[in-house]
Image 1 (cartoon, one colour):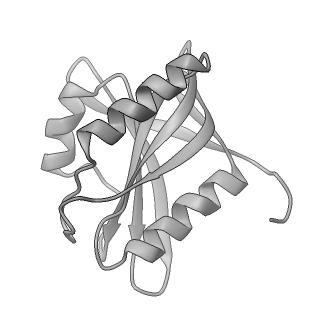
Image 2 (cartoon, rainbow, N blue to C red):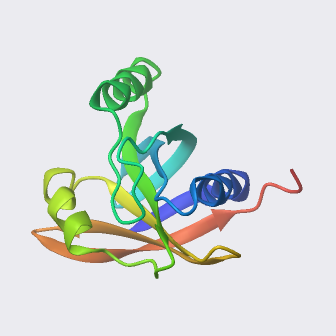
Length: 143
């Protein structure tokens, strides 16, 4: 399993995580998914309606609109990203519970402190088990 993402899109995710700190950020990944490869074409920032440092939730209507908009352009909702303020990038029990419902998606988790992004990892769920997803960053030059 592999997630392909442009460095400029990864920078957008990192900026969102910093902006939301000390709360978790949440966003959606739009693109294509085939043969174990998730290819990100667009990063869509969402609002964490929980305003929480340990949980996230995006407005279901917003998620639906992103899903439908992607579909109209021949793309898919392929993933979710969120941050873990003052923690590592790992799949929490809450994350794993939601992944059971959205197991076909890739989950990007950002571990961070107030001062820095410490790690970014990607996961998916297969047959009820959390699996690591390789992160392939495609360089896009300075932005």
